[in-house]
Image 1 (tube, rainbow, N blue to C red):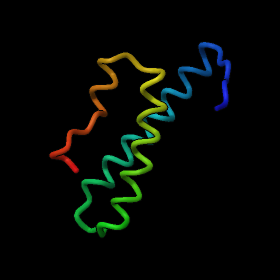
Image 2: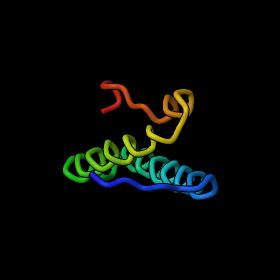
Image 3: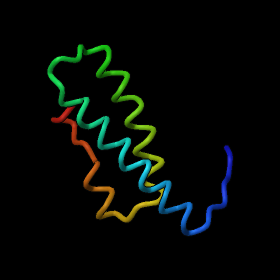
Image 4: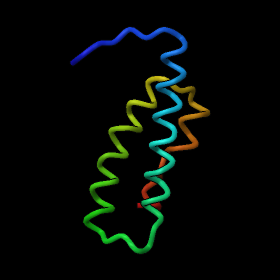
Length: 72
């Protein structure tokens, strides 16, 4: 496990980058043209990025990116 210390500006920048990445992955997961293998890889990556984002964001913000089992 690694630990990082970020100042407030760095935290907001990381928050922005993670949200944009989550948005792009959600868009890709809803793309009907992608095959299931690609979607599985995106889903796996989404879980990792979402856990990273959950460490920085408020519960309200986290709920915007939480996926339920019916979406998968």
